[in-house]
Amino acid sequence: MTQNHFTNNDPRITGEGNRSLSPHHVNRGDQFNQVSMEPDILRQDAQTEISNERPTVISLEIHENKLAIVGAIIPFSVLGVLIRIGLQRLETYPGAPVFGLVYAQWVGCFIMGIAVENKNAIHKWQIGLSSGLCGSITTFSSWQLDIFKGFSNYYFNPHTRGYNILDAISQLLVTMAISFNGFVFGQHAGHLVEWLVKKISPTKVCKEEIKIIPRGFALDYLSAPDYSVIGFGILCWLGVIFAAIFTQKQKELALACVFAPVGALLRWYLSFYNIYRAQRFPLGTFIANIFGTAVLAALALSQSGPVMTSISCTVVQALADGFCGKEYNTFQIQNAKISLLGCLTTISTFMV
Image (spheres, rainbow, N blue to C red):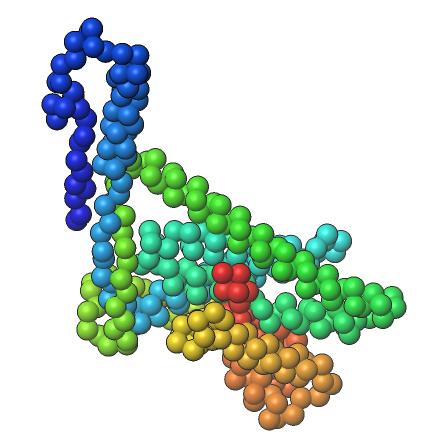
């Protein structure tokens, strides 16, 4: 901890003000200097008080073990996909003023803004919230698919080709504007949260400076809370797997939760290239988005075919966890597809 050393030059304390001047020898200039000395003294006292209230910087070393991060991403990704599918189902109805996907994009970017502004306060859950929760709520591939559907008039709406272009541009601009608005509003909310925390605990004047020490996937430096996080993540994944096996209703939703950690962990692993390969461009996230969009395009193309061959059925079955066969169910494949690729691709990272 650093200590603030300062010198008090107050003439009332140092004795320099004890120099006696006879009233007969004090001119008007001396009187002016003696009168203007008091504000200088008060200003010095105020600066001294401010310097004493400055927070002391404390350096913290955190051992970043990737196994604990994996355990944190799994439950957050499951929660994120539930939020996204719930918002899409809630906001998709006939006569809706805007497409339902923008609500999920706004919520994910809003939470990302809060997490970015308070990253030192929540450093233990930073990656779980950003890569796990926010990255699973927002989606890039479904956004690109909607733009393509707008260009191609996928739903055969009765209008000319010029309106197809306007439809696609609307999908592009509205999603970007909503996402950016959510992120900026989340930053303002993050400042409010920080102010409320300081107001609740005003005695805390220490400022933490985080130093991350990477430890890889080794079991060294794992503490008891780390093992708890890993165990909780495994139990969450096993829980949704058993739910997908034994449940009879909302099976597609349970499968969505099964595929969510796969996409989120793959995107998190690719995010390593954001730091080591490109300093100013999120290369890893870009690769995840492009790859997820390409796989989504292949799945959408397979859905449009009248008959599925045995090879294509095997590929889709591997991605959709067995939801295809002779009785091909488009709705079930679509939900499983959205769950995996929605967690693999994200918009919130680009907003940062």
